[in-house]
Image (tube, rainbow, N blue to C red; front, top):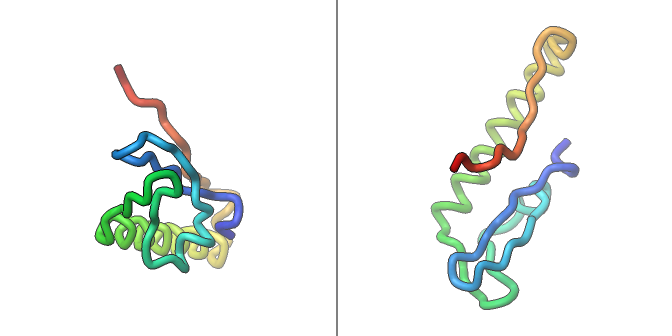
Length: 82
């Protein structure tokens, strides 16, 4: 289900941006910038993983209860407001 989703990270040290597919992120213990080796805080990664797991439960609930034609939601990137 999550193979087409990703989490975009921006390194606070070197400003490099990169995306990790959610299906791979769920198996990771940590995320490190490949340019400067900055390690994102464990608590941040843990909470992102929890949010993916909770969202997955919501998708499964909609599917299993035949609500897909009545209830629709998705994750979007919303630009920052000026």
